[in-house]
Image (tube, rainbow, N blue to C red):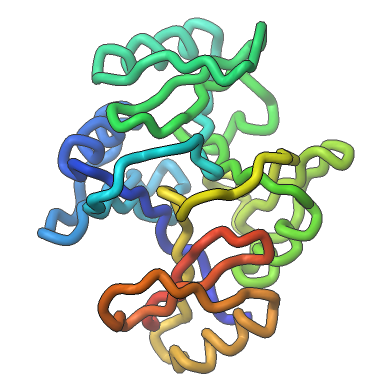
Amino acid sequence: MTTRLVNLVIDAARPEVLAGFWAALLGWHVAVEEAGEIDVRAPESDGWGLDLVFVPVPEPKEVKNRIHLDLASTTPAHQVELVARALELGGRRVDLGQGDVPWVVLADPEGNEFCVLEPRERYADTGAVASILVDAHDPELLAAFWARITGWPVRARDGDVLVGLRAPSGRGPWLEFLRNGDVKRVKNRVHLDVAPPAEAAHAAAVTEVVAAGAAPADLGGPELPWRVLTDPEGNEFCVLTPR
């Protein structure tokens, strides 16, 4: 498979506000600022090879996101500091029925859920973001699909509850699939982008990804240079043009 992960995309009513929140919280910087998107990028030392991309959409957020970020902390004091910083920047606490857990569930200024984790050995070297976490009815199925189209191998399993992928470099965040029985009802506000390398043919890359288990997604709107597909559980993602 020739495609690789390139972006985590977040729909936003006010992309500039949301990008500013995440850049300030993570200590990253705004790298691209255009009418159609704002990209937030990690420093090279962080090991994160994707851009956080914020795009304008008119639809309001309706349901809990099926994809969210988990932030890493190095000490209990650092976890407290991250939570305080998020609240100062415009985040808020969220009760999803998590009960008494060691991590803290928050939402950004547009209601996108994220977690600030307590220190965990698995995420000691990930940088600011510990994990991109995806709700899954069948974590093994989704992990196998995404491993195939990203080249990220399975590096962790927690019983039949969670399967974790990580980049072959061993740097940056995990991509994890967590068992969750919630039914997908609306288009995801957070999605992943993959892209083939510059010398590849876009159509051939799309054909490869569909053969791996993806399906076309009809979201309406104008014809675009990239292709929107869905993974085996209906999560939208894009195959961008070669780069």
